[in-house]
Length: 215
Image (cartoon, rainbow, N blue to C red; front, side, top):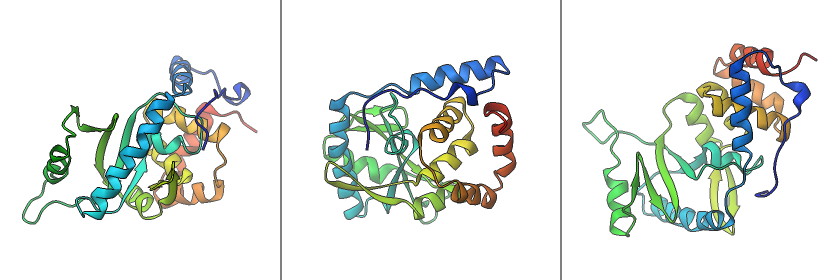
């Protein structure tokens, strides 16, 4: 795991075709900044709380996705939000998901600060998210064990994170996908199998044409 340094993209592989491309690259450089070491250390405490919640069956099996999971594969960015994916189902007789049990558990332990849809645990804004599509369900099922400062957790595989970035398709997600390609070490065969399974191959083809040089 690497938490320091800066990442610069291979400029020769990026097309300068539109203003959107330039804006995307600007976001890309913003994402390449490094979070403070004190925030990284607090992550261990946050993960301990999540593990306690899983043991107490307040949440089901969980895995870390999003930007924080990406940091374990590529240079870290500035985000301090922690996306926690769980196999979340509505309560019996309801069609809506409820976080009442999760928040009640955390409120009783002194974690009462809310930030939009997230709750702050040891300095990290944690958002509990359902696996709302088949790609996310597979990402959770195939999440890999990982340790942060001796605290066990699970994170999405690099290939699933890349597929999710492509699927969501916001500028910051596409910027992170560029970073994965230039800096990470993904299994490209596995990545393309995931894309094919979830009908994302054509979308990736457009991404290549737009942002990557022809070989």
